[in-house]
Length: 399
Image (tube, rainbow, N blue to C red; front, top):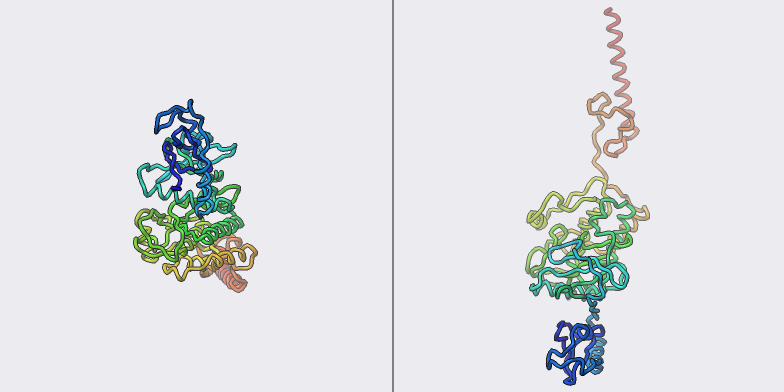
């Protein structure tokens, strides 16, 4: 038997969701969804009034056997009639619009493609659906429910993340939340890599927050790993992309996700975007020249050392996910030195104009003054007092 045909009306493959229906005595088929939208056979023009559509059991059985023996995930098709979609998108990116909707009494979002005739974008969209369906039952990945069509344009129906993306949460994260979010993001990346998937575009905007849990999304340009892959023309985020991803023709592997993770961890714990004062093509130039963001003084010391390894220009020198996990767990348990040691400042004389007026101010940039240093300052004060007393006595003698 030939491979399953597509429905001649909606051009979708027949499946368990869109079952093939015999609609006329000639044996012509359309899908079970389109049967409800028309009343005659588009091939022989015969009316359904003279023939009640019936299930094409043999074709359906063949479809099921192919799906059973295939490694490809089954992608449910969700009719638009089952969705209550808001009229206006609540978000818009470079390639898609995001609509809020209701499906089976729960909140979902529909990600609808913008470029209708862009074959490459359509392929990335299909890729996102397939990979999302493959990982749909994982708590660290945004769940894909299926696909639909809005005004004949492909859309992905997915889990709604009510707390937005990671970039919106970072400014208000506590230290404990920084650690916990980081650990869960790493678990999500481990899920991808264990399924031989390289994300290639990890960034805070592609990590959504639902019930205070970070979940990875947007697999449009993700790839199934085959040892090493070659960069073609892909759209990536310069702030978070490894240098090998910025030049077409370069080879890369899953260590490019380690680089992106390092930039994300830098942002989580510093609360500053990488290269925050740069934009446009200045960022990839700096990255290719080996420049990296500066760590603030209060950045966790051990973590900063790992991040420096993680964003190394040499992929072979980058640390592992397990090293990050181990470090974060030690931080969580208070087992590592947390603050980068600051360069000690010279002690300022108490009478110097720049000296703090209150003793409480003697912790310069959070570096405590030692007892020896306090004794030196006390000697300076005593010496100044003696000098003042001598001056007073001299004045009294003159008078």
